Length: 476
Image 1 (cartoon, rainbow, N blue to C red):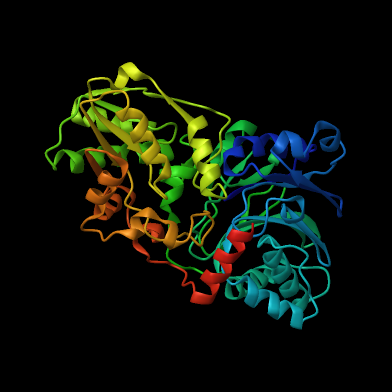
Image 2 (tube, rainbow, N blue to C red):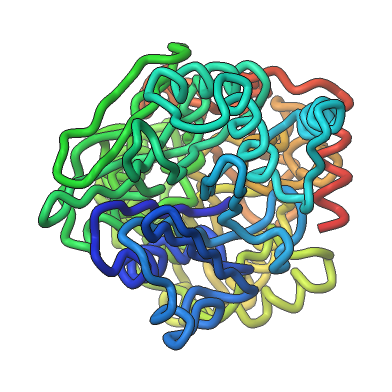
């Protein structure tokens, strides 16, 4: 999972990009980079670490240009090192590019590029997108690209590049400095744009980047389209490869900031509605409780909504260590178990003698929830129920969220009929309840990617592609 920022039409575009990247720092902490366009000259700086470390003030001051692209990275392909950090650039044609997502057919793309004498220099899947887009442009003409040329090249990129990707690039189009943005035909990964002062434009992963810049959120990058942004002009939108939208619902459940707006909906409101639906399904099982407690931070809106719908207390029961990382993406079990001891500390009086509902967004490997239930059981509650405001994660994601292989997913080890009872026994809880798939659909609608729950992948992924991605992740 990653986050991108593209800005055009600002005198100090790099400084604004750095600020906007910090608003989406939650989307990647391994590496960060900024590339600038200055009258046709380009410069890229990227390094390991979070934005303030990877792009220190003395470097930022040297990144001059009126257009810039920035990126924060958590690797779902390649490594978290500087070699695989984004953005990437090419001199022929001159272009800077970054993306968020996961390309599923990298070996196929790489083999075809080699036959054309083009070699990749990294394991990051942004570089194949850049190479394909550049290759398709050069097939049309060597210089002087028109908007029609870019439309044709993006259409060819859609045909050659499979998976999920939201892309922002800077190049010269029709003789002018232009920011170009497009998504995969199904628009699985997010991408929004907005207008700033003095005719500037930005295309970003989440609206919170627009908020921090003082830009007005104008809309989502449309599915199957390419957009052209230039200072002081209205953006031009051209249809390329129209397909049904399949927005990643795990963005709404877990990854995006709650104050972001995605596909026209506030993420916080989505999580609240999921909590309300979960309350109805939990209550229908005949359970009763005294208090609802969220596992911070993502679960707070759902927990508050569930408590309100059930008519019981909602309390803060866990204090989170802000400096611990996400545990399900840590490299091995020993590291994850050590992190759990740092991640949360319970407030004993919230749990003692109470029938407690612990609300969380998802269960992946199950290690975190087992540890949480053990901590709570040591505080002498009357009962401990676990409620999850998403269905069970039974399948890995190949579209940009680094979920483990199916063999490591705890829900995949049990049939749907016995899953909740089996996990309750495994965790030491009185019950486990997942939001049903129909319940998710009632809240989120039909235009979603829910492959991690259902195994229905909107872009087919072959066995060899799955094997390549899983092997690459193990080596990352």
